[in-house]
Length: 163
Image (tube, rainbow, N blue to C red):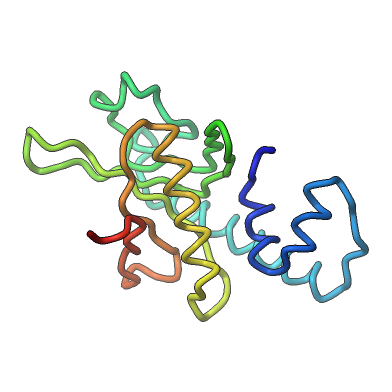
C-alpha cells in the first residue's frame, strides 16, 4: 500500500478515517471541514505564488533533477514537486536548495510546508518529517531539515533524530 501525505494526515487525525480512505470509502464532509480544507488550499496557493514572485525565474523549477544532476543544479527553489518512494508519496509545496559555501560540502535540501493555522502542532511537524523522508529517498541524499511557511523567522525543524 502506498502511503500518501493525505493518508498520513488523516491517520494523525483519526486512524479509522485513514483506514476507510485507504479502502476507497468516501464519507460525507461537513461544511466546516470543507471550509478548513479550502482555507488551507488557498493559503498554499498564495504562498507558492509569493515564493514564485520573489525569486528570479531561472532559479525556480517545478521538478527535481535526477540524483546524477544534483551537483550541477542551479535552481534554488522547486515548487509543487511530486516525490515518490517505494512506500510513500508526497506533493511538496516547495523545496529550498541551499548551496554550501565550502566546495567539499554538498547542498542541503529543505522541504517547505505551508501551514495556515496560527499554532505549529505536532501533526505539522510529523507531516514535515514525512516530506523530508520521502525527499531523502527520492534524492538518495539525507534530508535533515524541514521548514514551515509560518514566517521567515520560523526556524527550520530538525527531522533527523539526534544521536
